[in-house]
Length: 386
Image (cartoon, rainbow, N blue to C red; front, side, top):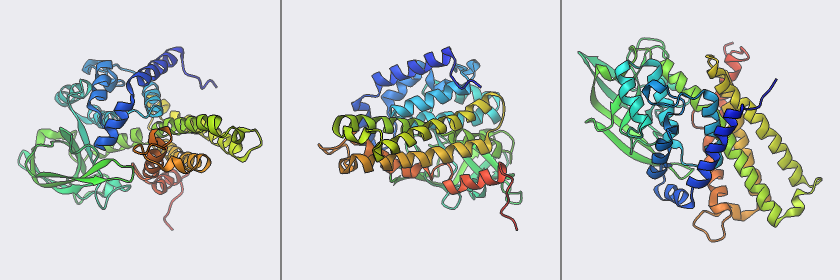
């Protein structure tokens, strides 16, 4: 079996690399540090100019119509260069839900707006009591005539403070099974009754708590049929859990570790040295993680649903990223724990930043424990019921 990219895919990969080498400047990295929201308006504008915000969106809405494999390459390579891609990730994930469930008017307005860089979404999914078990969400959307009245709270909502719209998951039937009574809505963030407050993460970036108090929206703001929003949520989770972002970061951190050791501690890279052996093991694991992760877009390209496969990719790649970061700090030494503000930091403080954010990666989009449960139930047909 041939696991290699095609010539066209390799050319696209090289184009992404060249772009990132030019555009992910120290000034962009400093901008992200200073603002703390993983969003650079200037970098995002350049993505829009390249058409890459709509990389895998249909050409009829202004997208480039690339396949999921190209999107995987894009995710891996931009992550390798530590590009500020959070806004692009959120918009891509949520726009796919609109493409799946939305009507033609919604697709024309919002998909095109995202591609042009004029619309920023946030994801109104997670709640204080409903994170990894997203289907247990409690936010209510009660229908009154041709309107819905929304009450509830969302938490850890990335980009809510800069978003134009929220793709909101709310319960529209409290008597239905928890996966069956959920609907998706496009909510204008300027609507009366919405309050956004900051939360600061271990990784140093801002997320938000969002309160909805008697927020009134039109029935036309619903995406798809009432009570059928879980299909859109599930699609979003599979995209988010593909794992290639974490693979790209792990590759880069290993490369930077080896680069530092070559210069400062070359004896550590001798064949029989424990550090050399450890790094070789991790390099092999990164290669394995890539194969597991690329299985997700490959299945999507074939029209398959990579539900348990996405969980496998997310679990393996995030735990590996954490292991790679821990190893880098262990073998390089204490200066890896200095931030970008210190004159004595290593790699502009990115070892330290990634060490913190790697811990978060095993929690967001479903904890490692939840991924194991999904794999056990849906891949291995195991059940927790006695």
